[in-house]
Length: 322
Ligand code: CP
Image 1 (tube, protein in one colour):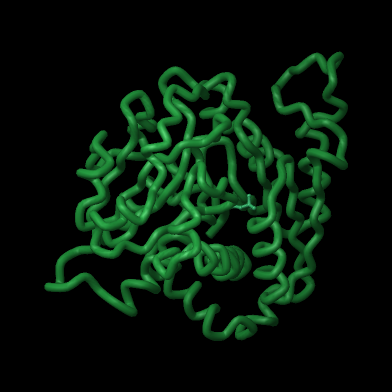
Image 2 (cartoon, rainbow, N blue to C red):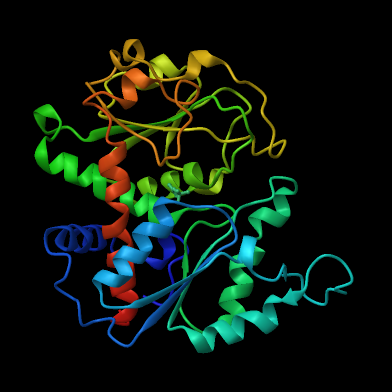
């Protein structure tokens, strides 16, 4: 693997999931793989799970880790080519990234979208500029439109659960991605990425439910069944993935915040006693209810813990040059 930006960088999802679950059983088996190698983890935005799990994963492989909170501690970076830097930006990525390429063996980067200009966000300029100028493998710790380490983790978690209990009668599992209310406009990254990975995985029936006007980019959802009636969508679901996102078409807006879209035990009663997932952080009793989050149906802690094994599998693939 040369980089990890989206599902398109993965040749075999099931093999990568197996590798991650092997690391979960035996975290230190490749302890020598990353000896004398260094990863730089750059954060232009806040993080808890991604930052800590990536550090632990790299350390499990014997790597040295340096975390740099560029957004709060570094020089303000410019990403536009031929920019006249008379504004607030201090250093161009074409000057900074090659230096990082000399300091590190792998560069991992978290950026967020502005949610102001869809074309700019969907061009993925920030991460593409790092790829262009760093000259070393780049791993996305979430970009403007995708969150691939989260999605790999989500499939690992679903696979782990399916290994324990498969749907009765040998039928395919049903996964529902449901929109949920939120007080702030949030990126579409997690929903885009989850859709992209579940569609590429192809191992389950996939339904997406959201209020009208919250359509995601078809590039990621194509292959899923889209149903605007949440109750209808939830019927017989084995997994419900809960996430808010802001509007894609009229970009970055909140059109509806209908609390009826928050998943409750009553709604869960429509499902096949579904396991409930969320990438976290979550706003309790706005996006997802206490009664669900604190129940045996919730996979959120297991899911967040699995972030380590997803990151470890990806770093391992890059280190071994596969
Ligand atoms: N799910 C996730 O990416 O969490 P953090 O923002 O805390 O890294």
